[in-house]
Length: 119
Image 1 (tube, rainbow, N blue to C red):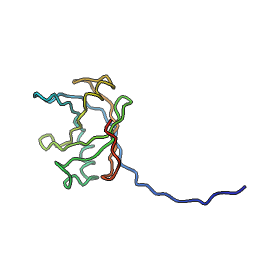
Image 2: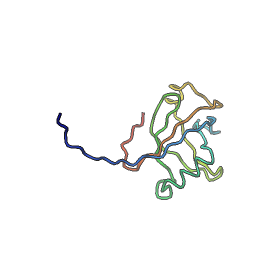
Image 3: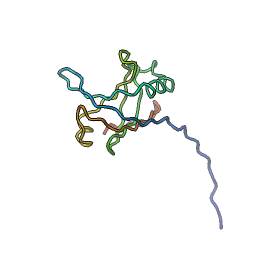
Image 4: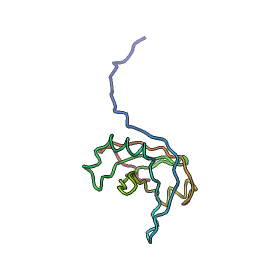
């Protein structure tokens, strides 16, 4: 039996987090919905990322809620000492969630050069 030449590929494993959070509506005309990351997750992300070098301290992430995955950015909220995860209408509709719902979230940090899927 002949084997092909083996190659070694190394890939940096992106930190990932699972947590439970309540979806909330920002009071105002825009109607933005957010999840606030738990303090321990936010602290770890701040340590893992180079947020200070990006626009508004944003961090690229891949997110999964209710079996629906998309890529976006989280933004620091200095008032709350955490990060805010925006959840757009298309995702809320697919996952059948609305403001006040507590949801299970899986979030994975993305490298700056990762291709983006904004579905």
